Amino acid sequence: MTNSFVQAAKKVLQTEADALETLKNDLPNDFSDLVKLILNLNGRVIVSGVGKSGHIGNKIAATLASTGTPAYFVHATEASHGDLGMITEKDLCLLISNSGETSEIFDIVAHARRFSIPIATISSNIESTLVKAANFKLCLPVVEEACPIGMAPTTSTTMMLALGDALAVALMEAKNFNTENFKVLHPGGKLGSKMMIVSQVMHKSDALPIVETKTSMKETLLTMSSKGFGIAAVVKENDFLVGVITDGDLRRHINDLMSKTAGDIASLSPITVVGETFVVDALKLMQENKITVLIVTSAENKPVGILHIQDLLKVGAA
Image (cartoon, rainbow, N blue to C red; front, side, top):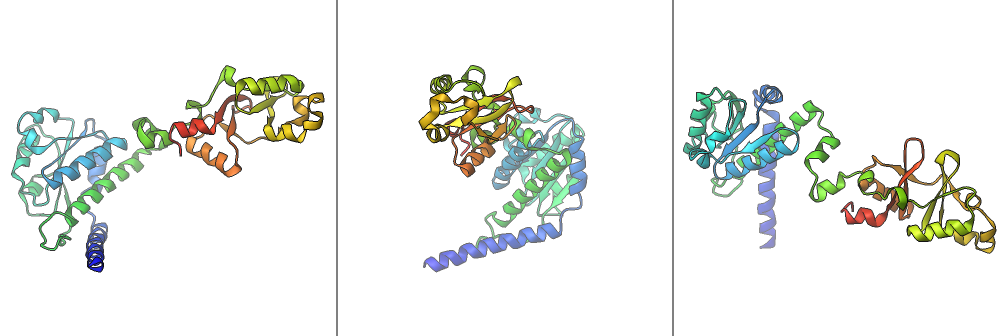
């Protein structure tokens, strides 16, 4: 019985993979023109659909919005009861219907025509009323649904979703949408934490355990103890970083420690990061070098912050 389940799953995945391959090789002719229109759009992409197409549309709208293309999902049924007011003359309507004959969606079509709002559609029925009404026709190849009775939206919705992703990514590339842009739109959750940079979480100013090369070890130990990081940044004239002192350095010089200065026992050329480093990269650097603290330096190699591994774990960088 278990093998039959696996075989059924493999058949579904193969059917949908074949459909995506067909879609890739027969990408709708209007795709590029639609991308160009959206790039010059002053309003938003209004996505709408009903049923499974509506769920797919909701996801497409969310993906567009989170990758730099203002978009909003309007449920076709709700549009007929007042939500048409959300659609302005500066917008584009992206209407999704596998059959192209979904009755609830035609109030949006009429509204768009009335105000000369361009219409794009994703549909499997090239001869449908919706496709004929659209300015941009993203027609899906006619392939079998993956369900055994050939009726439940499976393959068709997978193609819709993939085509929506393709549209979003094409727009991202055209806009040179980068990680900084992505970070602005994803401040929360796991994605947001991974996009944080070191300067947002590091300890600054009075928290820094900084000593000079000529500082006595008595004073250095007091600084290390009071700051609580188990490390001291050693600077020379003009506050340039020359090294760090860790517990290991203290142990290596334990026999004559108090007769030396910070510069005598510091480990030179320490591992550092700059404030613009992503926290995930800082954590990786710590793990690779088996350290728990990093000094954050400026472009002039002056200490501007300090970062403990616990700071990174607290913000979810792991």
